Amino acid sequence: MGRQICRTLVSFYLRSSSHSLPTRFLDPSSVSFFSSVANKTAKKPKISVFDYLVNQQQFSPEIASKALSIAAVKHVKTPERADSVLSYLKDVGFSRAQIETIVQKVPRVLNSDVENVLKPKVQVFQDTGFAAKDMTEIITGDPWILTRSPVNRIVPSIVALKSVVGSVANVAALLKKSAWFLKLDLEATMLPNIEYVQSFGVSEEKILRFISSFPRFFLFKPEHVKEFVRRVDEMGLDRESNMFLYAIRVVSSMSPEKWEVKLKLFRDLGFSDEDILFAFKRQPMAFSTSDKKVKEVVDFLVTEANVEISSIVKSPQLLICSVENRIKPRLMVIKALQSRNLLSREPKMTAVYKMAHVLFLKKYVLPYLDKVEDLMRIAMGTVAA
Image (tube, rainbow, N blue to C red; front, side):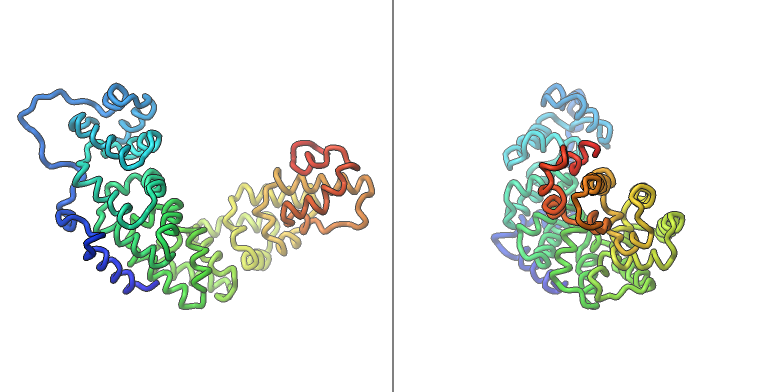
């Protein structure tokens, strides 16, 4: 997972005859998204991006309008060049819908040189073993990949990612979640961040899970990650805690000013500073929940379900739960059972709300279906008790 391994692999890739790019592509200055050659003597009428897409390619006016609205260049250089771009994308496996998405997001692709600009990017994915389906999904998700240097950005990024996650299939899965890995210098961001996090005892397995769940976190500048760690350290969270990475991630999602707004919200809802710190250490991700949802959950639990703030502090994962889809229906089920004296003892409601869905059904719904009308629908939140 080290940077030296990454450099070695990139060097090997570029030297290998079976994975090398044509010589003219190895100088990034020779790769231009637009052809620099124009026929200045021709007096052909210009064709707008909109007219070309609608009249010659039968794109919908909506897609063509969107493409025109963001196009730096409002005209296609020549219909023939644009035709060759669309034909090439189709030939390498892009569907009509995917091509429409690409053109809508990056309309200047229509003026690309297929041989010198588009093929080198696509060839990188093909030569490194990406399945055609994976390649088309990744590029469609972020068509700006087609504007990036294959030598300076795409190849090094793919090699670096493979050195971390272990296989092309895993790289593909990661890029489908976030193509940002192809936008930044991973040797200056991801790799040093991984080394830093490993330095205080976070296992490789946990890092890999975290990269998959929160792919952009490791793309921060290393000095920013160190600042996030400092802020979490100040809150007293043990670096060996299973929640430590999640705490850093939550802090990274908010500026200090936004964090203070979040703390004020909790204080206004009745949490003491000690309560807030205890809840954060136990479930940091609860603090990434929107302010609106936190208020909705706390208000319902306190006013409708008679849950005390101290109980929420001990079970902060409740703040992640949906009131309408989880908390309220489960409360209604328990009330329906209690009103019919079907429960031998009072259940602990915070445990009921946190319980896995299958377990809740098995314990409180399925045994009583013949005793309480519409109990399953009550549990699903589709009918009142």
